[in-house]
Length: 139
Image (cartoon, rainbow, N blue to C red; front, top):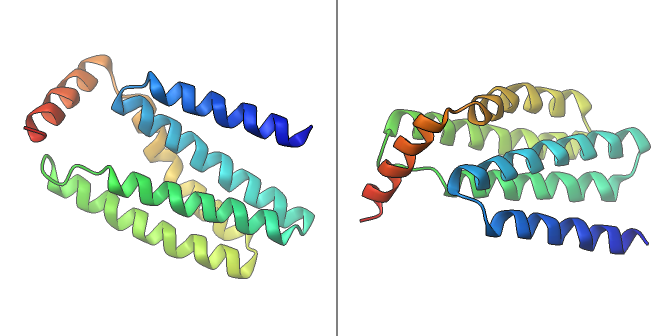
């Protein structure tokens, strides 16, 4: 039964991404990152090393995806700052995995959540400007 639920959840995420614009894709990745941090913390509490490692590994991959999506042509200062933050988060995720540390995962959450919250609150007008800049940088 658990495997079927996992397959359903994966299919739902894939369907969500098929119709998503770039802003929504980043939102999905950020939401999934936060889910993996939560699941890693729960696994540490349960002393489930395999689940902790799997969640942290997924979180690292998501951060890599977010890094890969940075637009290094448009606003270099913001992109560099986010790139540095993502590098730091990746290092701290490794530390959290090795140390089985909920405290480090809380630190990561506290660093990442304001970025996610800001992203979630981007106005439709600013999204339109961003899509325009993205289209220009891809030509």
